[in-house]
Length: 210
Image 1 (cartoon, rainbow, N blue to C red):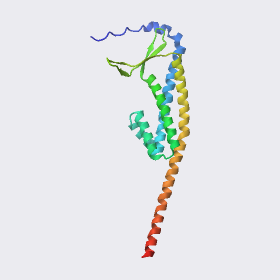
Image 2: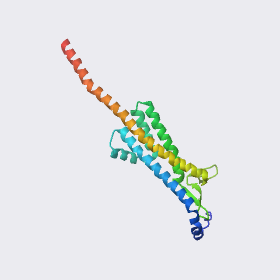
Image 3: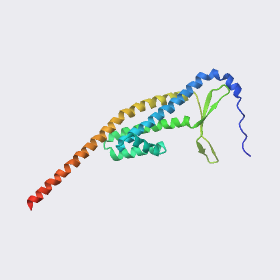
Image 4: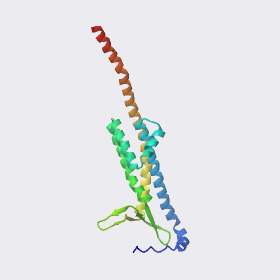
């Protein structure tokens, strides 16, 4: 037999007392919104990094970015391109650090973007219940239940502040990466331009020898 349904919430009673908990609920919802907003803005900046690494235009970079349907695949591509085209180890380390920080905030963002929210009889958001499936030895079950307590609120505030700093750090990094690759391209162009001249000298030398 299927498991019994949970009891229907007393929506009328909750609506009657919910205004008393509105400030707390608004704080939680605002933090969730800021977390998702800041994370998305940071993810979009990786389009510019891809544009720089591919030496292409923004539209083409966005097409490549959107064609890869997971964030992990997009970041993997950026790191692989960097290891192919960037010779400055400091720049590579900086890029790796930026991506690692972004991945840390991705885990926090996913907690709040992919969960159910438990609400008590007074309208307070009391817990999050992850909808990720966890496999144990005996059965499959929904993921972890976490309280929406002061420690969790503090974690969210710190994550939003961290994403703000990450955004600025990526903006600072982009021109450095662009300059490095532009310098490398100029060196390649100079080397290519010099090669025919050296070949001509060898040809003239051979002609004199004949």
